[in-house]
Amino acid sequence: MNLAVIGLGKLGLPLAALLANSGNKVVGFDLSTSLRDSITSGTFKSNEPNLEEVLKKSRGNLQIANNIAEAVRDCSAVFIIVPTPSQDSGHFSNKYVVEVLKAIGNAIKSKDTPTVVDIVSTVMPGSCDGELKSALEDSSGKKLGNDLGLCYNPEFIALGSVLKDMSEPDMHLVGASHKWAGDVVEKALNSMVDKPVPCRRMSLIEAELVKISVNNFVTMKISFANSLMQVANKLGDLNIDVVTEAIGLDSRVGNKYLKAAVPYGGPCFPRDTRALSALYRDFNVGDSLPLATESLNSSHLDFLADLVVAGREANTVIGIIGLSYKTGTSVIDESPGVNLAKKLVERGFTVFSWDDEGANLGPESEVISMQTLGELISTSDLLVISRPHFNWHEVKRELDASGKTYLDFWRQK
Image (cartoon, rainbow, N blue to C red; front, top):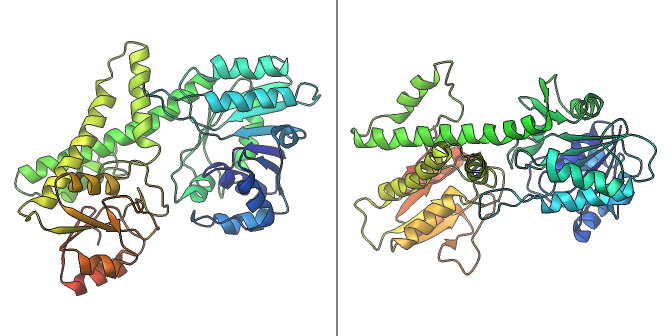
C-alpha cells in the first residue's frame, strides 16, 4: 500500500517505521526540519526500544517529504498523529489536527483517486463528525463519500514499548465514515501485526468515546488499588499484594493494572482522565468518577510522602531511583518519581535522584541528579524506588551491598 504519516514524533515515527518495515511504501512528514534531516541521513537517535533498528530495516520503503502535499500525493491513506494538547478546561485542542487537515485537503483537491484520512491523535468525542470533517471537506472541496473517507484509529500504546504495543495490540479500533475507508485502514494495520488481531469497527464518535473510556477505566483501576493500599496500611500494614491478587482472580476484575504502587502519571493517563471529566460536564453527566480518580491519585502521592518521611529527621538525605514515568523512556510528564521528589523538597528534605533512562530535572532544579546509582547511594541516607526497573536485580544487589535502607513501592522480587 502507498501510505503517508503526518507527524513523526514519539508515536508517529514508530508507526511509519513499522508500516514501512511491513512492505508498505510510506512517505512521512514532520514540521521539524532537523528531525526530517536526521531520519533521511540515518543519524536519528532515540531511546525508544528497537526504533533505530526498525528504521534501518525500513529505509527502502520509507521516504521523508518536505511538505504535506508531497507526502499525500500518491497515498491511499494518510495517518495523522500530531499533538492535541490539553486546554485549561480539560478538553483536547484540535488546532494542529485542523491545520494538517486543511493542508491535506488543499493537496488532494485535484486528486482523482480515493483517499482515506485516518486520525490517530486522541481527540474529544464529536470532533471527527464536527470541526475535523468540516476542515477536510471545506479545504478539499470534496464531501466524504466514494472518493474521500475519514477514520479515527487511536493507538493504545505507552512510551518505552511503542513498537511492541503497535505490533502486538489487544485490538484495533477503527471508527469510519464509510465501510470502504475502514477497510483500507484495517488492511494497513493488519500488515504490521505479528498475529491476527481483533478489530472493532464502529462510527467515528463511538471510537472517540471508546478511546477516552479505556484509559479512564485503567486510571480508575490504578487509583482503586492504591486506595486499598492506604487502607491496608491503616489496618495494620496488611500485605496489599495478597489482597489485590485475590481480587484480580475474579474474572470480572482481572489483575492487570490492579497493582498498588505509585500514582499513575505520564503524558496520557492524567490528561485523559481530565478530558472525560470535561466531557461529562459538557453533557451535564455527573463527573464524580473521573474526579474521584484524580483526587485519589493526588492523595496517594501525599500518602507515599508520609511513608517516606515517617520517623525521619529533617536532615535525612533522600535518593529517588527513577524519575521517568515508566521504564523504557526518559519522559517525565507527570512522573510519579518527579512529583514525589518535589513533594519531599517542599517538606524540607534534601533530595537527590538517579534514572537509568537518563531523565533529570536540569541544573536549576532543587532535585540534584546523580550520574550513577553508586553515587546516589553513597550520598543518600534513604533510597526510594519509584518505578519498576528492567535491571532490578542489579539495582537490588547494589542497594543490599550498601546496607542503606530503601523503600520499593513496587515490591519487586
